[in-house]
Length: 459
Figure 1 (spheres, rainbow, N blue to C red):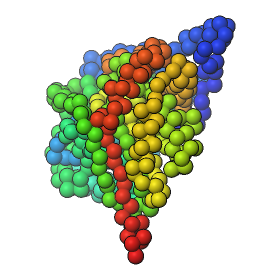
Figure 2: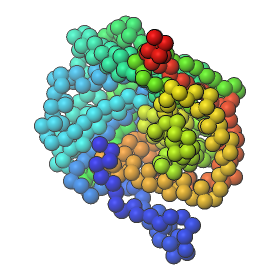
Figure 3: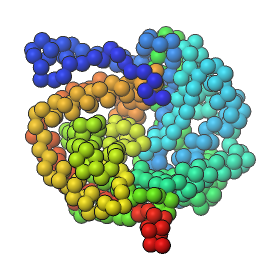
């Protein structure tokens, strides 16, 4: 749904034009997302961002718990708990939350990511109060029963079987690569969950998880859309203000050591019909100058028809029909809060060897020297992508960045600083970042070996 419409306000002129064009570009750049940020006494972070372009409202609740820091003997538990949040609360029975949203003309969803679990509703603006009440009701307490737990254990296990175990290229590379590229268990375990761990979850586990992580002082509430600011603040205080805070545990160490040796792995897949490859490089620390430089290198190397890897591997050599990838396969380069990789992947014909593919990639990376013109083009592409994120799905991308920046940085107004941070990047910094972060010893290569295709060829 992210591309239902684009914010047409953000017409821009390519950088490096005449003085008048540059002045117009600067004037357009002055647009800022409205942000009002405060915290309730119980610690809930609240972000309000009015937007009258559509008579809709978004309620997005983000909890500061994701795949990464779930319990060590309960892999997949963060995702399992996402399902539990729809099984009933104090005043809404099983699945009644979904019915409430849909019968009021809205849409909803939830997801589990590396560093957060989120829930959102997009509704007609006059139903905002109803959604605030409903989200507060399940933050206050769930209907945690053995029947609901057993049911959702089955749902999640079936999801794993359908989406990963019985699917060609299942989990490749979004689920696989973190387990190969990282060394710290928190970053390297099976986020979808081992079936034995999912079976082992108990009611006590669920209650403890809810009481620990689904507290207002571990959450952010973003409201975006057509609403009255004063009235919305009153509703938020009324419905969320008296939910008790929790004692939050210390965050585990999720750091990764500097990789000093190239890693290479093979994943056998009897359902795949041709080989595939994923190549990942560890990212710089979030919010550093090098981090923004890698964001622009992503535009140069991977994104769009003029990306260097696309031109080399598709247009010139014909090894593949498309190169896909980026930073954070479960979101975007902004909405995560720990170690991450810049990654790209593609399938290729069995007649092409892995060595040929890697040699071609090395030619692109080793010969990469960023020029001012390349940097300006990357800035234009990044700006376009950023505004797509902010405007898509009635402002859901805006709500996402506001909530995650509140959770991770205690500063949702960072949303208005991103463009300027990218503009600070120089060609010199880009080339230094290439040298340090796109080195062979900082990368992991994962190849899918199509066993079925190999077996057929040997008959």
